[in-house]
Every structure is written in C-alpha cells, then in structure tokens.
Figure 1 (cartoon, rainbow, N blue to C red):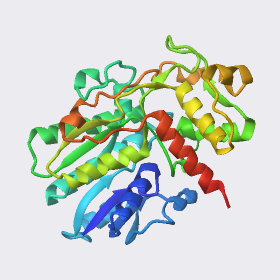
Figure 2 (figure 1 turned 180 degrees about the vertical axis):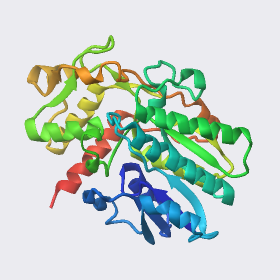
Figure 3 (figure 1 turned 120 degrees about the horizontal axis):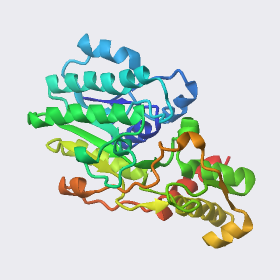
Figure 4 (figure 1 turned 90 degrees about the vertical axis):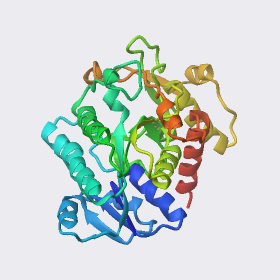
Amino acid sequence: MSVIVTGAAGFIGSNLVKALNARGENDIVAVDNLSRAEKVANLSDLEITDFIDKRDLAGRLSAGDFGSKVAAVLHQGACSDTMETDGRYMMENNYEYSLMLKRWCLARGVPFIYASSASVYGAGRVFRESREHEAPLNVYGYSKFLFDQAVRRTLAEKPKTQVAGFRYFNVYGPREAHKGRMASVAFHFYDQYLAEGRVKLFEGSGGYGPGEQVRDFISVEDVVRVNLFFLDNPHVSGIFNVGTGRAQTFNDVALATVNAIRRSRGEKALTLAEMRASGAIEYIPFPAQLVGKYQSYTQADMGALRAAGYTERFLGVEEGVGRYVATRIAASKP
C-alpha cells in the first residue's frame, strides 16, 4: 500500500521520504509543487512510485485513483512564509487544502498525520496545546491555528481513524537549502561564516540582549522520528508540540555552527566572548518590519507528546547543529 507524502520535495517532507526509504518503504506517492525546479534536488536520491502536482491531487483522490491502496497520508505541504501578505492564497493553500485531505482520509479510514506550527502561539509565553495560549501574529500562523481548530472538532467526535497534528518549533537540518531566507538560522550562519568569517545576529529586542532571544530549536532528525512513531502507532491521535522542551539562544546556535566548522578545520573552539572580541559574531539592527511579529521566546511544553508514549531523547543545539554542519561539509566535498 502507498504512503502519500505532501510537500515531498520540501524540507521535512523529503527527510520523511528518505526515512521511509531507509525502512524499506518505497511505495510512496510524492505530492508537491515544482514550479521552483531546484526543489527536485530533494527528490533525486529518493525512491518513489509516483509524483503528483499538488493542484492535481484533489482530482485524483475524488476520481478514486487510489481506491483502498493508501496506508497513510503524511501532509507536510504548506506555504510557510511568515511574511506572506496574500491571505487568500495562504488560507486556500494551508487551510482549505488540509480540510480536503482530512475529509478524504476520515471517509476512508486512512491515518492522517499533518504539520501544524508553533506559530499558533504568537507572542505568548506558555506553549501548551490549549486554546487560551493561542494567538497567532500573522496569516500563516492563523491558517495553521484554524485548521487545528477544525481537527479539535473532529477529535471531539472520537473518530476511529488516526488524526495527528504536530506543532513544529524551529526546525533545522539537511534538505532546507531551497527555503532561501526562510531556511533555519543554522543554515544561514553556516553560509555567512564560510563567506565572511562571521555570523550576523539581531541586536537586543523584546527585553532580550544581543543574540539572547531564545527559541526551541529542533533537528529534523527528531521531527522525522516523531512522525514515524505516530505512523507506527495509528491508535494515537491529537495535536502535539514537536520541539525539544529546551529553549536556547541564537548565540548558542552561532557558537555551535562556528565551532563545528572550526573543528572540521582542526581549529580550537571559541567561547562567545572570544567570538565577539574577534568579530566572528556581529550584531545587526532588529528589522522594523518584524516589530510586533517576532517570537523572542519559544519553549515547547512536551507533556502531551510524552503522555502519548514518545520516549526518545531530543538533540540539543550543540549536538544537532554540529551533526548538521558535518553533513553540509561532507556534501560540499568533491
């Protein structure tokens, strides 16, 4: 039976397909929009049985092309640009499209696992999967929030089919190059240091000092493991945070990135003070367009995911970013 993966040429989607392949699962229907052809690089080393443009999937599903041959739908596709101003496009792409897939899965008893986002919490200080803590700051966050609300109504009816949503926090790792400015800070720090011998962080904002804004940074390795856990446990439904439960600073990410590069060159690790003194870290003005739309603090409450039975350890920035940098360095060698 096939596994349908939407957003399969994207960051998390392609990492999921890779992990499925590693388990010997190659009957995968990849769904995406390849209008940006460079994304095909994320599929070229993977095994799939079919590719469907995201605009054609609804028609294929309603035509009954798959019959009863779908084992699960892993819905990772979305517009994730938090600066997108076309609200109609965002709602069609992230909300209405997701509703269509959920309805199809429920009607046929197909497990439905989808990507939500920690952006639903907005500028809040409590990151627990509960309505009183949710107040998105932009239309991207709102599109994810509104679909989560629809899922809550579905779950209240106690469906026999699995419906599981994951509020991803700040994900980093391989296969994100196509995201451009929306790629992780670890990705950008790596490129900046190789190009200029320094990384650029925001000056203080929201009561935080330079580079001291904190986020829950999670490796895509951990994100994939969570998805596979739910795929293997179709009796578990709900909406869950997927972070590490540990907030770390942007300075921490910069340190981990630069020192991983330095290790690869046989150079000694630097402290934050040494990086500042040497100019390896530069602080730049906080962008005016992000004022009031920026999360200076996130830290996932992991209680619900742990209660659901997930027991794996999460990678901290030091280990996770170090592994990511090593992967990029290895890929850059002829």
